[in-house]
Length: 268
Image 1 (cartoon, rainbow, N blue to C red):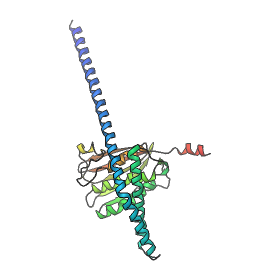
Image 2 (cartoon, one colour):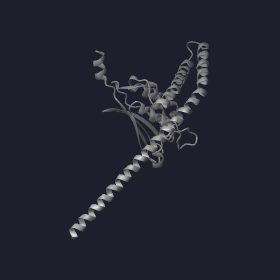
Image 3 (tube, rainbow, N blue to C red):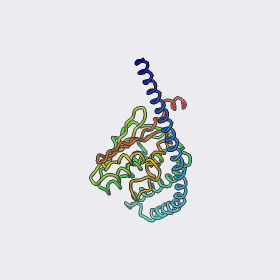
Image 4 (cartoon, rainbow, N blue to C red):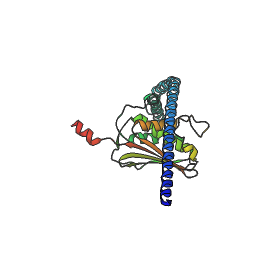
């Protein structure tokens, strides 16, 4: 009798545990669904915001590019200012493309892709982030550039903006005299890692950094990391963050490699 009672109690306990686990699983699934719905609504809001932003900025960008072309034509051919104006023109061109890409991204999550050497958008992003890093006395350490291309299927302009968002965010979170570094590892995926020696992110904020309009900085719109996450997802990739307060942050962007062998077979 005692043995039967013991087994009966054990079965009841296990049944209760199974029911509790099932209820928790349902609750977790419900919470995930609510979070996904909330995220969809947030990205819809990003789309509306991006539309208004494009309407406001596009005329100014066009006017600035026209003014630069006028200045270029008025300068002597040997003027050293041509280089600076070319850089400014390039950044304005990138901004114009980014406005269009952000609109497409916010609306559909899809980008027009082609085969891209990952080194190109990363190198361009590092160049664009250099003035900000220098102004804050932060060492921007580039990766050891490989001679072998790292081919992925992607949108070069969107990828450059993705890396630039992450680099500038790292620079802004790092104190003077600190360091921001980038490196690339190639395995099953291409992984771009951007690390800083900055303040680090508290755990409660770390869980929300990819939410649109969320920022720990009062003067920030909170769109940079949200657009970065969405851009990575649109490329079939993912972003992960490791951070500790007082020890800095590392952001890993994993992107699928292009099927170069398959493309060569098709082209043949």
